[in-house]
Image (tube, rainbow, N blue to C red; front, side):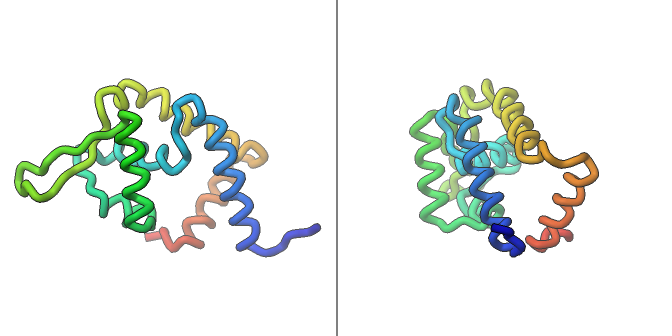
Length: 140
């Protein structure tokens, strides 16, 4: 069957991404969704990450975000810290154990990227990224 609809191909690529992620992340006992939250936390922890920040960045619902964060906390990857400027506000930060595995987790991200783009030339990968940003209206 010849598939020539962008929406179907994007969905198929998303499902393939989930499959690849899960196979690479199995040894960490992380899902793709949990991994992407950890990636964000590693990059933004110094800025103070709140639940709402994750919801906005990944366009996730509040219940979904809470579930991911709760699972990461149970697995020992994140912890909450109280905002010293507002004791009603809490931030999410990676634990020391998570930071100890940061390089290994980042290497897995590189491996996932290579696996997902293995059939593309470098210029094709750049073009794919450009087009996906355009589809997602991220070219600002």
